[in-house]
Length: 156
Image (cartoon, rainbow, N blue to C red; front, side, top):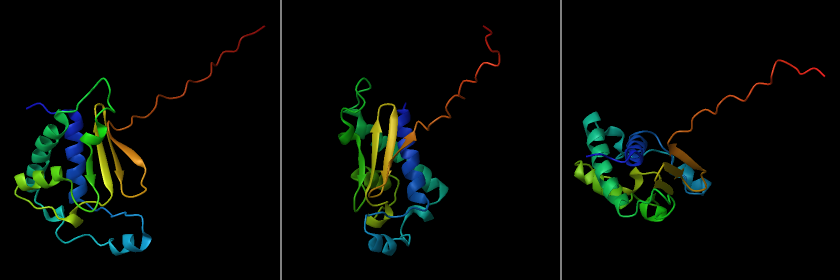
């Protein structure tokens, strides 16, 4: 099945995030410090096969999640419906993908207060309370070099 590149990028980001180090950022420095230790049940122990199974299941779940409200001509329309939200626990889309892959996700297995917007042409994430919104797809490309001044000068 052909997948939207936005869906593929979103699934890669979540798979990488859930299986790598992340910090909970909830907006309270004391609570953030208490949550600094990674949970024992997080996906960090997933095998390569389990990570791939999760990523593929998540692509399928996300494709279904965004299908009913995909408007390429008006990318922000339906953005809230397409969002994946982890407040104090995993979004149902993440839970369903984990179950389809034979895995479990608990409330501490996802970065708290994280939201991902999957919009036509862009995937963006705010990774924790007060964090800046960051585009994760397409990745920014280096800007073209600034035009160089002419080396020849006009003479009067």
